[in-house]
Length: 270
Image (cartoon, rainbow, N blue to C red; front, side, top):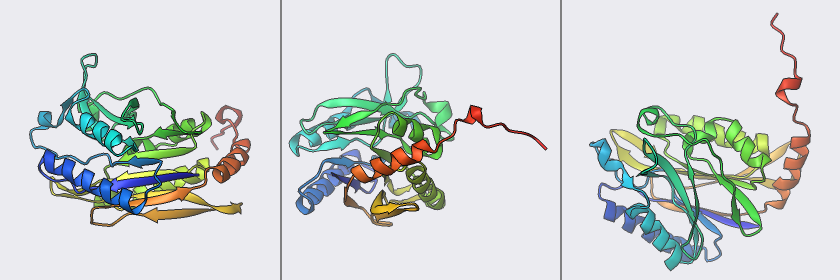
């Protein structure tokens, strides 16, 4: 069993106010749900400035240090959402998500693999997918657009991930597609998915939150049945669920036995 949660703060136009918003929600979450294994933040939870270069942090800058402090002070494992940071060894900045353990130690980070739209010009994409350890379970972090392609979630599942966390920044127009992607990735890999979405308004775009935790109803093998827990819509807040990872592990093994390798399927044009 794993106790997972998403924090869905409102993106404010002042960084310190955003920090206060995140910590306030984390306190409320812990008060309501004292048994927590891991908390995930959305892709964007800090201000978006018109001067694009002002949105970048130095490597392990103030956003990193803030989340690290929360993990230590509240003794909670935290996935940082996505941080835009400049690195001395990289030609372009990276979009990255850090994982801190409940002692405030940096365990690792996952850079975004599939860059979306304008991100392709501004950022460097990653060629590496990481599998993180949490107690006796494994997980991967797939940042937003990484969930829109079947290869990255499939690789994570094939290499031992028991659950997928996805910090996202989905605006109102893309919510239907996003929910479809999350359900599809869960079903095709028989793996729980946690999608933590941004809530706020910037550049005349509305990001409604409505984060989702998708797991499986025990006992339903064929067809399997999804259990979906949803966060607030058009509001800040949090959501929580207790997930049995042993059942999806069982049905994932059955599903993966049925996979046929692409190079063994003959394709003929008629």
